[in-house]
Image (tube, rainbow, N blue to C red; front, side, top):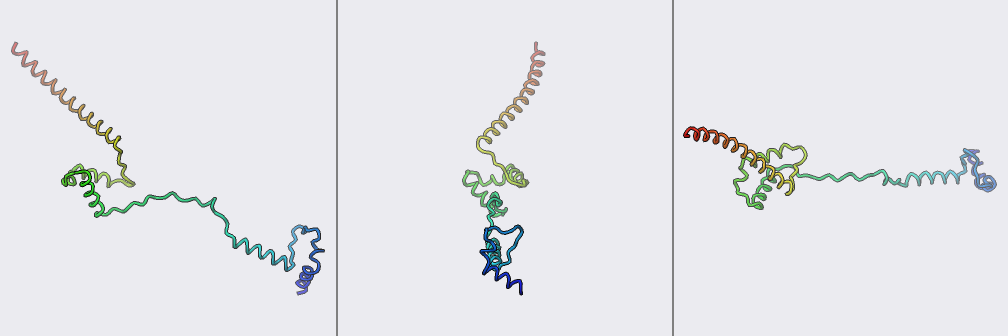
Length: 157
């Protein structure tokens, strides 16, 4: 009780004399009620002010939201595809269509549909491959026919 009375006395009567040079001694914590109140208010103000986290907070990349598979959605998409591309209704029953759907169903992420240019190049490459296969098949058959005809024609001479 005596110490608190002395602190009050110093704070009221001798504050100017005690800190006349405006410099407090090293590691000195003033226990004058006015200084205690100033420190308490500074701590409360620091606790009340929110720190800025803009430098630390990074926005997450936006994920694309995909609708889950539903039979109704697939049926609606298939019907719209039939109408917009002028496909016959029997196209949905074609084995190649079922093969395409089965292949797409086995994917784990998503299906990459090629653009028009890539599709065009794939069709041309498939056409050339089939043409080459036909040519090799007929070339062998022509050779066999040539051998048969040579043998036949050679027999008449």
